[in-house]
Length: 599
Image (cartoon, rainbow, N blue to C red; front, side, top):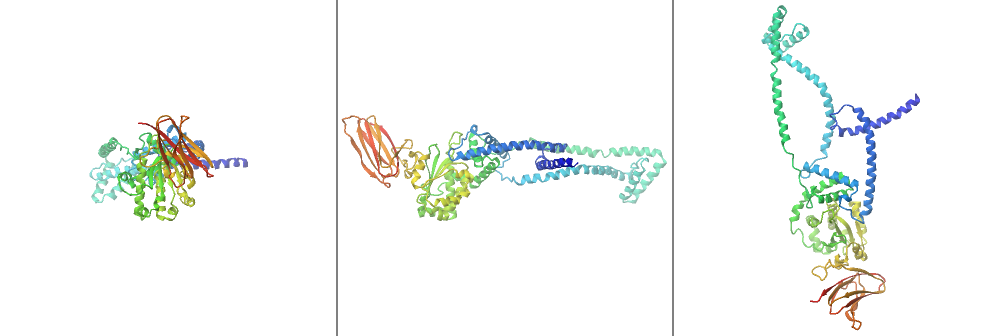
């Protein structure tokens, strides 16, 4: 017996665990399984087995998702993910499909336009469920009571009629009922004459058998008399049935249309690209991505984005603070933010002096972003992100000690992270001073790990070198070490530049060939210069003379950033550029050239 009890006790413990699992799931399945209440015990026994299998599969899927997330985290800082649905892994495809279903349901219910209160709704639906059960259980008990009342009602209806006609007396075979009938008649009939006819009727029934036949006939007539009321109820029933029919015939509400950045949701492949941004911002957690989407739609309505796009003259003088210039090597538009411009006290005061001006700055900045985002290509093969360049040159203390600028910067960062998911492919900070490390630690808690993985920091001596890793020199503005200038120039960003390294304490030469008579145009730049530079023409004919085009001279760091020159010649040959680097540091050389045919 002892052994048997030992064996049975663990079984009892297992039964407790099994019973707990379905209990937790009952609230969600009550509504669905109301029609099939029989066999509850069989369901409880079978559910845990299936649930254990499902849980095992879920754990495997979670492991796969975690592995994929680790891969994403590792590759996020090096390569941007594909926006093609076919390139997604299976968990990501499933997440996208689930996301679309949630959005479609929300559009059908108009949850984006009307302020939805989803949290209280499920709580109210779940609480009455056990009460509904109790009501359903109480109904079978109440039904017999109702039947008894119905049985009593016809009796009471027959009693007052007994005073008029001797038809209410039951047959003599039921004496008990006669007494009850008589007592009730005496209690309910307030006028005394009503009781006298009932007693005389009883005496007549005992004496004459013929009276009983007449009573039976009258009872039959009286029983048939209440028949009209039930006939009236079914007559009213069709009228009630017609209402739901009218409601059924009413067409369902048309799904609402919601657009973000000019792209309608669930319209085409462009919508998938936008939805992937929300999923990636929330690590492909569908519910969190859906909550973020609803929050963004609500914020855009509150901020009145559509009206903001049409506003003009919100703020002036910020053209050199925030601007778009060129593209990177992968085709992303590049946005430059130069905080050093706020050293201008007048500009700073006009932008951040009070809360109203800071609010205008945020509206101007959001308008700037919205206009440029709508220029992006949201096709799966297109470019739908930008590169942010933040220049901290000449801004020591501005962000750390200027409270107004710090507040506006933090608000802008928060707005970007909450309402513009995955629009930044790379965030490069250049001319970073020593104190920025402390500031970065201050704002770091407000940023997600994925956002921080896109950050790149470069000090003043590494600014150009860092930019050239991501942006071609012909696309980089001259103030950051590139060749791109404003206005009409001889060369455009479409003319590629060549990069070379000048070794320390060495001379370096570049040959520009001339294959036909015409005009040779070139421009050169050495990042940081402090190098001697000269140019000369060497003809192809051996007996020809060498011409000095540009006399050798030393170009200092603060001298002309880009040197351009043109040379018209009627014979073939080459122009030789000479660079003499006498410093102990290697230098980055940039140059490009083209030949114009003679007219």
